[in-house]
Image (cartoon, rainbow, N blue to C red; front, side, top):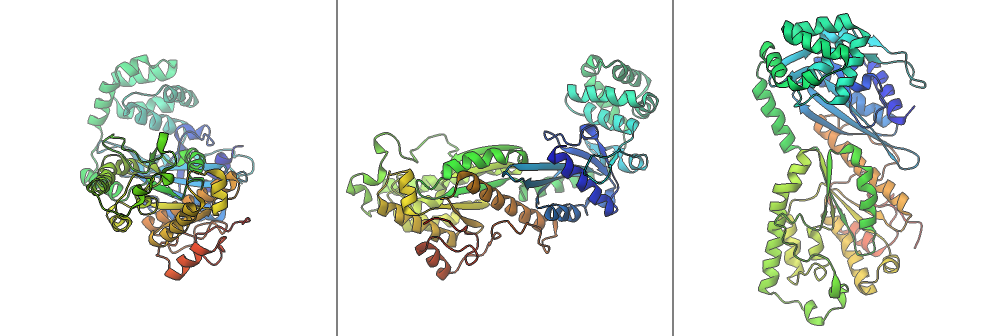
Length: 497
């Protein structure tokens, strides 16, 4: 049995013990362990708002996190749970609970009648018993209503509908007659019986219009939908992560490992180098060609003067971030996407020559407050000798200066963490994943109102200190390496130095 199947079945059993009535529908009714799809469930309307706490408690007790709760419909919420296995791999279970089936302000299917006829499965080994699924005829009509209201009935759903029909042909035929007139009902019944859905595909727009015309409207449906969309816009379910650190600290390597591992948690991903670049101008932001050693260029580039070009470039970067966020980054997070930045605006105040910025570093530091902040910042930290062994594009003294400045930056950034980059890639990747999962868990707890409980695992890194660190803490972190994890929150102790 797969890990997702075991966690999902055990979680449903835990909800039963809390008195929650549910029924699994859709593809999960046949195989609850499918990792490429959500587990669709119908639940009592009164229980929908109270599901977060028991789900989060189960995740905590089993060493995982409730990392997201996505209100994709007015009466539906998808809970995203995650665990890290012994090898550092991510196990994800997405439970999509709905209090019924609604489309375009019309109530298609109420959950209460379906729950009254639900059935218990035989159970999976090691899960403590079975779980509840919809009766065959109810499962059929749920799948049919959901499929017909899509732009096109997917082939996989059509094949499953025929299998559900064969479990209870009489009950399925009776359910169809409740929703369509005789001619349309005969067409659908014949397609399900024969397993040939071509006629349904051709007539799907008509079937959809007839269905919606015969169903009752939901009171205040428009107002409820506007409120839901407003919540999604003001509280995006995606994530913006900035990876910071000097050259040789392992930022790119960690991003290459972490981004694919997080794919099950997000609908889409996008990676950025330093800035969003909404205009596509491609102004140089990193070393290339004959400027591959930027800190060894002529001394005049390092002269602390203010030029019109420098001011214009600094203003351009500020505009780049605001327009880029509005056009790509923020919409991505609203749609539950992951935006991973390799470097961020804050690099201008630490490594100005590399980013072709010759203006005053103090001004760049002040402008940081005007730039949309990432949700989470991860500073890759290593001794100077370790970073010089990986990359020697800058002198050791410059690497040491940047190393100190990046640790000081942690004192200015909320929701920031210092990660020891000297350890093996697998260990660093796991620790970064724990930081991200813990952040998502805390954010979900705060949004859903159960933040008073400790809902993250004891093994997670010290937990998202969002307050600014004291000047004494920052100075200690900057001059001492390794930094004791127990004494300095969000810092992972190194075994080397």
